[in-house]
Image (cartoon, rainbow, N blue to C red; front, side):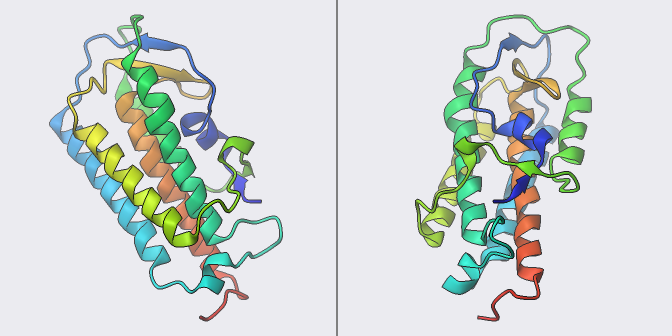
Length: 206
């Protein structure tokens, strides 16, 4: 089974319903929105490029019995992105309390972008987002692309992405924009893992 960064789990994966609060006086800038859209597109394209032209043997190759195959990594990405769309997004929409006025979202944005893709510390992924081979490799990739379209639509929507927060045990409260950054950074993290699998000396040539 793949190792997984504990901070990344806390940021984007937890199925627990977290406490929610309402942020004071923060609006998502057009610059931030464009930055987020580029990051979603870049990480989507990075995953597509990393998996392009793989044979069935390459999709299913494991560098060790306790490591994930590329197919399993993509399945995991689908499960995670769906958690954002199906779990976190409704919580953000239903927030009702006021956040501290001195909250600086830029610091949290930067922390997510720096720490989420970092694979130097690894922990086991929690059961809800462990892949089980429920889809073929191509079906998993198609599902990922469909979910990513929905995440892009969420960022483009008129939702108050800076005004509502869902809290987590590492960064405190994260707003909707930060959750979207986290999901893109999570894709970046696991695309790096795919490249590690492909770099293994035993990776099939075809």
